[in-house]
Image (cartoon, rainbow, N blue to C red):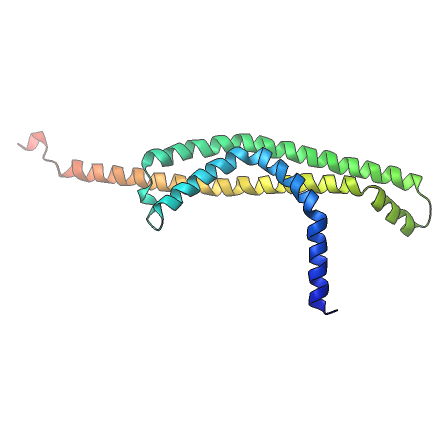
Length: 180
């Protein structure tokens, strides 16, 4: 078999074996990031609706709304990240306890014991992987939401500065009552 065929076969095996883990992990991710995903999707639809046009085409009230909504959602998502982190830590601890217990119960050479322990605690390893993946994914989503929020703040600040500049420019050129 050629190297490419071997790699393709191995990749397919990994994909098949990881289906369950990915499904459980995705369920957790959806559960914990639903509101954040929804807000970002709304923004994405707005951006799609303006197409190639400038962000200037988005009304001020929508930018203001998302400048308030996204941090509020991030606040709760931050709590959920910590919750997932704690669950990942508990899963990791549970795995270690199961491995230690299994190590005491199995017999054989060190290599045989290690192989048996890995086999006996495979489920615990998978549960830990599920929680770690969900934790890391939600953490990355929060980091990206922070960048979206930062971009919205910049757009809003620019608009405010332009309004102030226009108002100042108009005010400075209006004749004063004293000059009459």
